[in-house]
Amino acid sequence: MKFLIVDAFTETLFGGNPAGIVLLPDGADFPSDELCVKTAAELRYSETAFIQDLGNNEFKIRYFTPAAEVDLCGHATMAAAYAVMELIEPGETQVCFDTLSGRLTVDKTPDGLYAMDFPAYELSPVPVTDAMEQAIGARPVAAYMGRDLLCVMENENLVRAAQPDLAKAALFSVGAIFLPPDAK
Image (tube, rainbow, N blue to C red; front, side):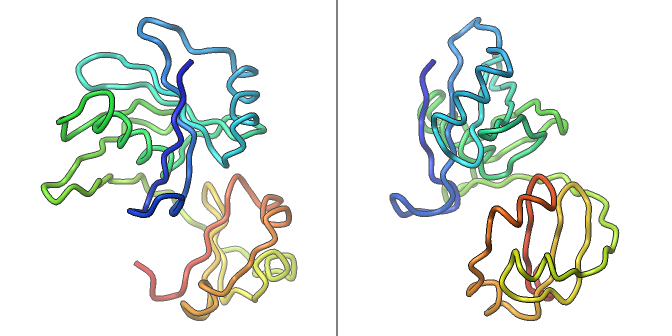
């Protein structure tokens, strides 16, 4: 298997959010889940995307952490789109991914940026707890649970200054998202 390391959400080398991208050989079946998890653990990124070319600019994509498969990963999807449109099919301006969360389409805009309509999850309010504060390093003003835990912080400065304890944050769900209250 060939693999790439792609930094999403940045124009700076070694910046942004890195993801492993594993390119499956043409005509190959997906490796076993065990091999995917072990590969993700070897690469040591929060998520590694495995992509299989289905033809016609469509790809099957699966996301693995060093511990398990997850149904969706935004930065790994964007990293995979970059790999497809810049390296595998240069000049393409759209790629479609079949995921466990449904079909995702990424478009390359005329100014060279990548855009994706990310699926939304229903959120339900949950009580703010001391454990959340300990994981984030500051107390949220509100919290919601959907696929992941979403914590609303009092202001952007708290978000920027946060140094979360990722081991504690991992206890809440697959991932945790911390936003200031005026975030869109």
